[in-house]
Length: 136
Image (cartoon, rainbow, N blue to C red; front, side, top):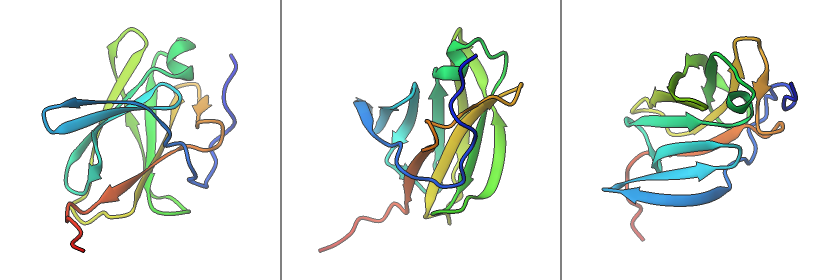
């Protein structure tokens, strides 16, 4: 099985959008590598849904985990969140965002056999907003 390089500790890039759709006021965006997230933008205190149909899913993984942490540069509060098989080849997980968290959500994926999909060393990284509208 061809697998992306092992998990890196640097959270850089990986947020290039392919398409965005609007459902009500929440937006769902497809990111590179078979990843979609909603709602966007990420706001502290909300719950994020991550869907994955990338390399591990297409290679027949029987369980996929969302490996996630917070922060700029080094990750903190790292956890492995078991994803649910939504339909064949598509995995889904939800991530509650702490109301006080205002940095970045960094994530990648691994399977039960410890194979990783980390976007070829870039991971996925999204800014978390505090929900305040800036005034100019």
